Structures are given as structure tokens and as C-alpha cells.
Image 1 (spheres, rainbow, N blue to C red):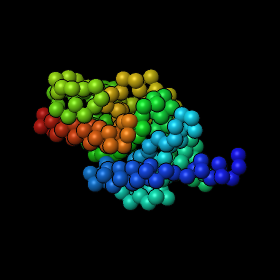
Image 2 (cartoon, one colour; image 1 turned 180 degrees about the horizontal axis):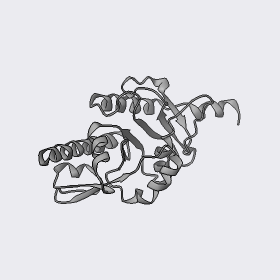
Image 3 (tube, rainbow, N blue to C red; image 1 turned 30 degrees about the vertical axis):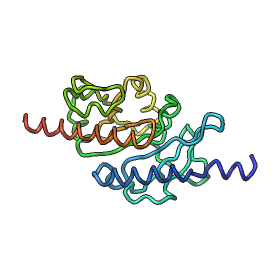
Image 4 (cartoon, helix red, strand yellow; image 1 turned 90 degrees about the horizontal axis):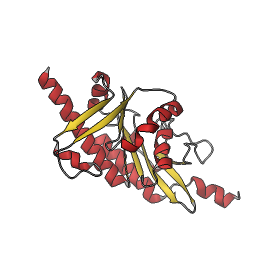
Length: 215
């Protein structure tokens, strides 16, 4: 590969940088990405030229992102520029991009409600019924429905975790939740992914409040 092609492969499109920085500021505003928690990505490229992902660099605060904190990876989670270090959790983003071509953005947050509920719920899912905001998720046109948010045990081995999550992905209409960790939500573009994340975080906060009232 010549130098021009090599350089262009790791450059991040300006629109992708803007989308990731905007999402980081929004998520930080609501306290969903404390310290260096969370990951944000968008798909770049096309089928002819090959797809890439623009992802947040490892170890950076998502509320104070700079353009240099958004780096390019291939769809197996490997940085395209030597020396760049994406989070190990980039594998979970890339899994979605590889398996579902319609997905254009993936968000991962660590809200208090998601963390607490995931650690106290004994089953393998959280169920939500009757909420108007269920209509924020693809295919829903009424509040008179029930949607499940799958729960998976945390694992520091991302490849192993990805293999555990994989069979459930086609039915994850809300996203999914890792115990003691946080949620993964996606959409065809960043605006949709953000709307779904906000909808899910509202539902998680409501469920936590309802459980407090029942205690």
C-alpha cells in the first residue's frame, strides 16, 4: 500500500468527528459517562471502498473529547494508525457493524440506573411495559407492548463476551445491558442512536424509582 492510501485509511471523516464529540457532550451532560467510562462510535466508508469505524480513544473523558480523541479502526477493532489505542470494548461496537450493515452508530454508557438495576436484577432481562417511550425503539408504534432488555454477565475478555452476546443480537430491540457495567444502544445514524439511548435511560430511571417505591 502506498503512503497516500495508508494515510487516508486512518484519517477520520470530519462529520464522524463532529458526531462523536456531540454525542460525548450529550452523554456527559446526563451523567452517563463518568470519568473515562463509555464508548462512542460511528461507521465510516461504504461497501465498495470498505467500512471503517470512528471510535473514541481509550482512557479519555467523553465529556471533554477533542478531535484527536476520535480514531479510525477496522471492523475487527484494530486501530488503523500505529500507536492509536481504542478501548478493548471496541470489539463489541465492531461486532454490530459487521453483523448488521444498517447500523451506523453505537453508544455505550454507564448510568447509575443501568448499573444498579443490572446488579440487583436476578433474571436475564429487564422488561418494560406500558411506557410511552417504548415508541422510541424500532418497530414500535404503541405503548401497549412489552420490550425486553437482555442482561449479560460482565467479562473482561471482550472476544468471549462478544460470542456470548452474538446469538441474542437479532432480538435486541432496545439494546442490551452488561451487569455492573452499562448499556449498548445503536441506530442507523447518531441522532437515532442518541434518541434510543435517552429513551432507554429514561425507562431505566423510571424502573429504578418504581422499585424504590415498592421497597
